[in-house]
Image (cartoon, rainbow, N blue to C red; front, side, top):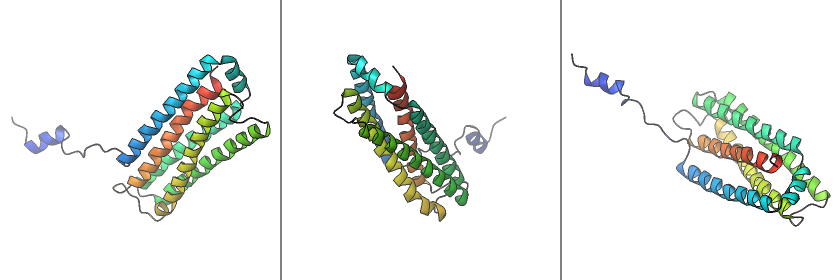
Length: 201
């Protein structure tokens, strides 16, 4: 007994739409470049710590792990809000999506405030780039990441208005997807940066 061609194609999944990479390809290329850049900085930090264990141990002892942990929760929560934003926008629930995106933006802003306070505390104590190799790399890594969080917050701010106006849908969500991809990269970088710089001895 033969199976009709239409049923056969459906059975093997030929009628299903092909998988699509979320967001713009340019954003993914940028993400790859940024991950490679941070990877080199992480290696530089780890290698220098092997050469100067006492300096790095003293520097890490002076960091506030609780602030770092709170910042980790803020970024992970912001990523969860961004994911909810995208899901709601694709489902056509634009008001709910706007609220989720605003929550992600506020959480990202909370990270920036806490990190700024951490920098200010260090500078008031006389600690800067020139203090030693640990603080030079700490400022470089966290400062570079800080700028990425700022960029992510700017992107979320720019996405808020068109999202509230209902411009995004399941078939037209490229800009929102790209913004979320960028933010998830920011979150991933911190998940590596926090234990490497604040916790590992």
